[in-house]
Image 1 (cartoon, rainbow, N blue to C red):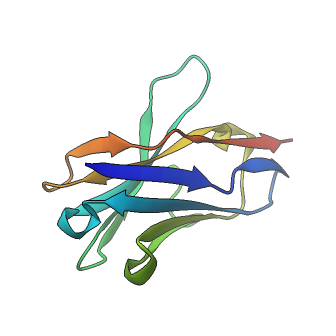
Image 2 (tube, rainbow, N blue to C red; image 1 turned 45 degrees about the vertical axis):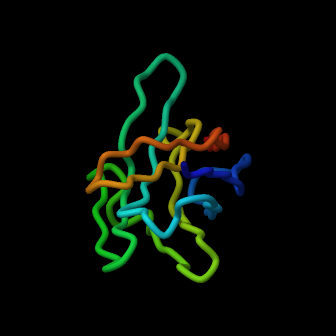
Length: 118
């Protein structure tokens, strides 16, 4: 089992920045990858970014490429999502997820709300 706790959400004006954190505990040594997803009201959960736990290779959805950066601190078992140039359409609940096999994300945090005002 992997437990995930997100933090860092809040209210920000368009063009601003926020950094989300995801602290992992449990079977973190077995994790293959971590990811960030988001869900806006009335919409399905969507992929935002992911990072492989060992190699640190990253991948982003086109909607956030160039604005968001995912990173990790293995010593702290923490993954970050730096979000710059935020837009109102980035408003959503952001979820951290962990995978033990490939990019099969089976463990989820409780979510943190990000609201971008225009």
